[in-house]
Amino acid sequence: QVRLAESGGGSVQAGGSLTLSCAASGYIYDRRCIGWFRQAPGKEREGVASIYFNRGTEDYVNSVKGRFTISQDNAGQTVYLQMSNLKPEDTAMYYCAARDGGCIFRAALFKDWGQGTQVTVSS
Image (cartoon, rainbow, N blue to C red; front, top):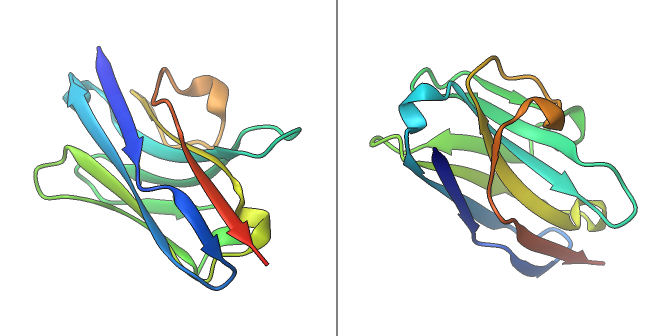
C-alpha cells in the first residue's frame, strides 16, 4: 500500500509562489507515475503535472506550463510541485496521486491519493 501526504498549501496573492510537497511511504517502488491534481469547487478534478518515478520525465497541463515545475528528491520519497506566478484560477485543493502505469491525466486511473492541501490565490 502506498501512502501519500501533501503539505505546503496556503494563501498567496496573484504573482506569488508556493511549493507543495508529496511525501510517499509504503510500496512506492511499485508505482511508476506520481501526479499532481487539483479540484476547485464545482469543477472536476484535473491533472496538473506528473513525473515518472525514478525517470524524471515530466508532463504538464497547458495552463501551468512555464509556471509549475514537478520534481523528485534523490531518495525518491518526496515529489514537489513548485508553483510560481500564481493566478486566482489556480485556487483549488491540490492532491498527489500514484499509479502503477503510465502518466495519463485521468484521475480515475490513479489508485492512491493523499488528503489534499488547499491553495488559495487572491487577486
